[in-house]
Image (cartoon, rainbow, N blue to C red):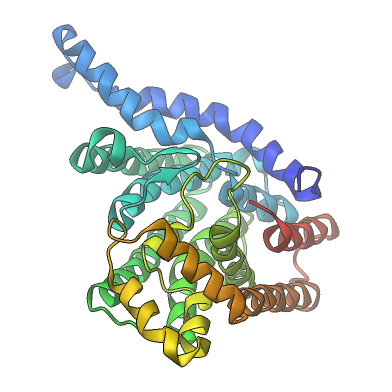
Length: 355
């Protein structure tokens, strides 16, 4: 996938947003004279900044800010004026990932140990909080760039998007806590819609559209489009977790199996595994990530392959991508031709990527 067309858009976004990120991070410890950090605590300040900067320095794909910029420009908006919102979108990903990794007890993020595995949970939470505050500070800057009404709408959309995402996380965590071992595919899609579809796809697009002065009817269509595209994206992501080493960045075999994460692949396996093997599967799923052995994780993935679960999920992701493309061509007539082509490239990228 190194030569995929959409990668050019992602790289162009990173080129524009990363310098803004670096500049924003410099302001983490900028305080008024009354509460400035004393020089004798400078080493502590350096430690704080290094820890808070960690995830941003690792630089993900920048998919979400890319969609902010793409939709804004495709609806006649200003790339320069919406860059600040794109930066805030990327900052939101950084702090959410820190907290998400703690909640899921993840071991790796972007090829390196998760922040809580480096500094401990308490300090990692604090680092996430610092980036969270910085995100809202960056969004406040929109009032110096955009019309007040548009800045207000972006702030409201951001709050709604994050609140819905956090509720989606509540659903996932609570069902896991209750040991709801056999949820339905509908349950899994509900979590995907609450987290990935809105936060990763629909939300960024809606933010870009608001920056271009979109009408509510257009925002509703972007949500429906993002829902289909988001489902395809997440199902493919879950498939890669089972089958890919993410270009050498992922060292642990399938974190989703270790965490007993409820995916469409696991639901299909639970419904289709041979009857005599189901007790063993349930026994493995009841174990914590630390209790599971590599042999057990490999057995679950092998069972998914033998039961047709991997093929089933891959076809499902492809089906949602086809629906998304159809909806793009039929309903998103307010997106210009260049924007539509880039979105079509994005759909293809999300379901055909190998990491």
